[in-house]
Length: 130
Image (cartoon, rainbow, N blue to C red):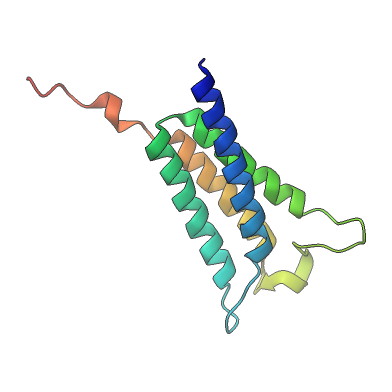
């Protein structure tokens, strides 16, 4: 384990946490009743995890990025000291029967799992000399 890998993991954790905080705050934005904030949060999280996976080529860095994303989301879902909440529960933050906060957290977990466990196709290519 080298210092560069550890720094890459810490950087990925911080980037994931920063995006997780921003996406958690903005996931409830709606335009004309449509959950635009949720769609942008999911698209952005998927793009971020894909970029880390392709650029660093290390599953542990993607896992660190995803852990930062999920930890920030879970942290901001808690009730604040003054009783305020960013991710309300129940019907106040729902589109139909689906709560946007729950949908955002479930989508984030699924995206992290897909990015971490996606097969590495670079190591399974047949030799070109055949």
